[in-house]
Image (cartoon, rainbow, N blue to C red):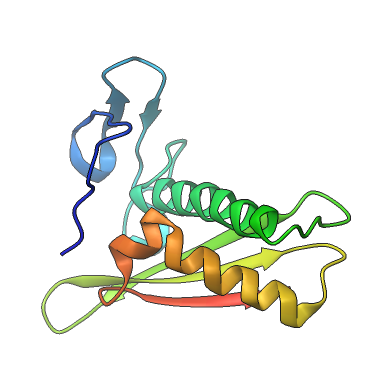
Length: 142
């Protein structure tokens, strides 16, 4: 188990109503309605869902790690890089599990070099460290 040596930041979010409710951070900066997608037997609706929130967090955090690794290697992409996180959920023998694909776009960076940067980011990103060995995470350089 990996435990931080020092806490640099922490946050607190409370959910009420489960997948068809609301979630809000203690500081008030995050406040979202939650809806169960139709594909999961829900009504759909205006709200987001835990998988979208996880995808947003993972994509943003992973992009930060990609930029850090590129910067330490003195590699500058020709345009703003991006990460798209595709999060899927489905049944396993007991309960449900997630699978993730991270699609990384590093414009103007040779594919082999971009793959090395992405591998380095995967070693550093807190989301990658949290999911390693627990969730199938596929890395794709576009």
